[in-house]
Image (cartoon, rainbow, N blue to C red; front, top):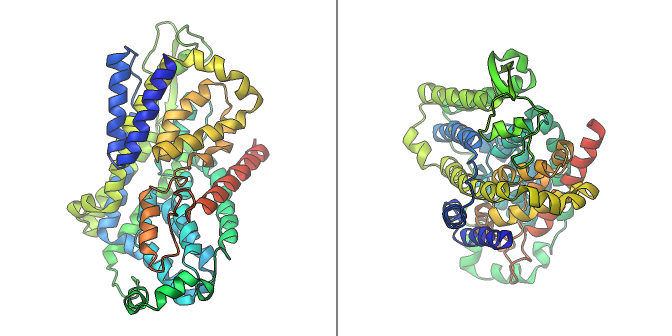
Length: 474
């Protein structure tokens, strides 16, 4: 019965990935309905805390985008790239990476991608080299952003299973590991493919006057765009909000404390073998298993408050149009992520929670011997659902329930990015279209695309380095 229900879940993920966008979360609802209404499984819990954080962060980032602040950030990145065009294969991915770290979503790089291609083309560098790794870098940055859903979900879920870790401590591992992974991927891409003057396909395209004019007739740039002072203020407010979140996460003694009734963590309950504390996270608190404690304000609440206040300040003082924010790519991509995480994580939690004892018994031997193997599970699930946040929310509770230590899960955290494997993600497709030279390609056999090598190298190296850093720190 479990295999049948698992097949239904995987089928929903496959069909949803074919339609993409909002359909992935919505079609997961069909599988959820079959599990609950058809098979009678007890419904799991939707990840409301993570969803609220995404809404708040996307609202703030969307307001900054609407104010014109994103154009200013792109201008800064473009100046760096045009100042060092010969090293664009290294600088381009670092620019897209840190843009994602700042904003919390990889969809902010669409404006920068045509500029990267234009600089490489005019310098005579094969655009596939910087474009392929830059697109990968825009997604790698998600596990290094203090306001990204994947990072916040990792901290929140870990705390509920007894692994108390702050967002800055997560970034101490993922940030250097990801940068090293990207630098190695950039080095591997530095001489990738034939040089343009030796590429017969590119030279053939040059002979067509229309194609030549398409490639060299116009210049992609934002340097001639005037940035108003209000846009710069919006960026300062946004960055100030992120800094405040990091400060509160690092020094939680600054937060107000409240008396809370919590479950005694050491008390075992009979329901799925979970502790009373874990049951409390599911809304199940049994009488006689609780006590009152003084606890600081939770960081998920802090992030929501700070982001909403910053969004309001940007509207009031920076002339940001809420209508323009809603119509922007940052807001729209964030809302798609909300629906995806909502449907996928709820569906996965429903299946795994009902079969947790059997899953624990089946996988306990493998997990005890090779706890790092959960990285392969994270990677494969990411290929299916195209969302790092959804991977964390749907798979982390399972990983903790299998007895995998939080330190190991932190070490394999970079492996939650695997959806470059099948090149159907919007940023990859957009990068192919932005490359006017035609060197960044999907490939005849689907998997032989321009993002496979830099993706495997960056994620693989980042995961290895992350595991090494965790070993050193813990």
